[in-house]
Amino acid sequence: MQADVLTMQADVLTMQADALTMQADALTMQCIAKINSLRINEMLYLDWIKLSV
Image (tube, rainbow, N blue to C red; front, side, top):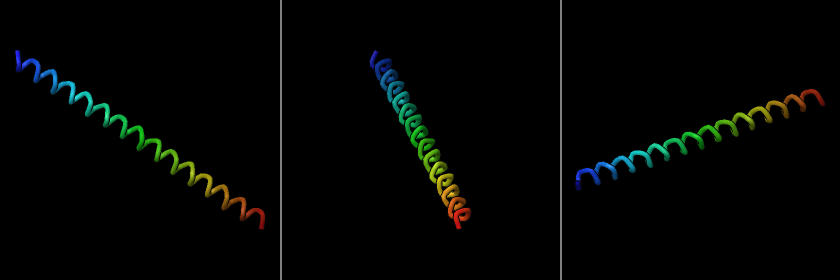
């Protein structure tokens, strides 16, 4: 009986770890998207400067 409880607790901890990993992956993807967006904005700004000179 106690072994079953420990197994279930281990399963819960594994699921929590998986959830944290997915959250970290989502945050990483958001950061990558933001960096890409900033790079695109920088390129557009530099193009605008070149065209306005």
